[in-house]
Image (cartoon, rainbow, N blue to C red; front, side):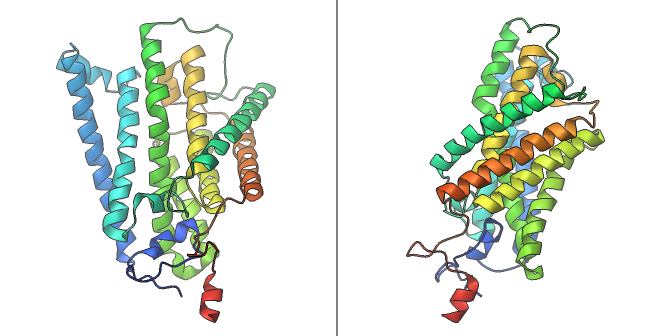
Length: 331
């Protein structure tokens, strides 16, 4: 077994879900890290709520009007900004927990290369555009998909200051929101659950690292979801989790998440209603084939591109090669 001593050589040949083994040992660490992350996350949400409320009051709103804007009963640009900023704050929260309990720098919660691979991320953005184009095409060929159906019969929504503000929030903050969710669910939680299941074997730990965070991701969107909407989010989480394992980092999942949210929010802003987009109801089973087209299509495109480009999916040694545990033991 490779050494987990932080003062000695770091283990190599590790998958993404095994990266916590680069730091100090102790099964208690992920068990403590998960609730600690939860506490810091909710503390960040509270801080952001106070900050956004103060900004609204400073802009001329009464305290009552500011609270109403942030309630979420009717989606407002301020409410969407608060949601996005809350998830953006989850990124440094993950970094803090990973550093305190696992001796990880931020890069090791990002990929097996120890950093965000920007060129690979750019490739993934392009692939996500292709996958979403296929999704729109499939959606147009199938019957009504409930809340997922694009209805353009009423024409485009008029341009207003509210639409402008929503657009600014979507463009500037939605990428941070998507990245925040990926750092939590496909980042820290994947590594934590993968580490907890490590004794059961590599395949089991990889499966746990994918399935459990995907389930938590779907549940985090609310317990009152329709079954098709829940399955749609669960499938998204499974694909994003598989991408982390197969490509060695969060880049592919973040790219898919950002483009998916851009499309959903953009279409709602242009033709529908943002409140419904943020809290979809009335899901249809016909949305499942559309989800599969997007998810499986993107998975195949991203994994194929990663193999073709030689994207690193395991940690490497000082010489740049991947040394597996069996080879280390033989040495």
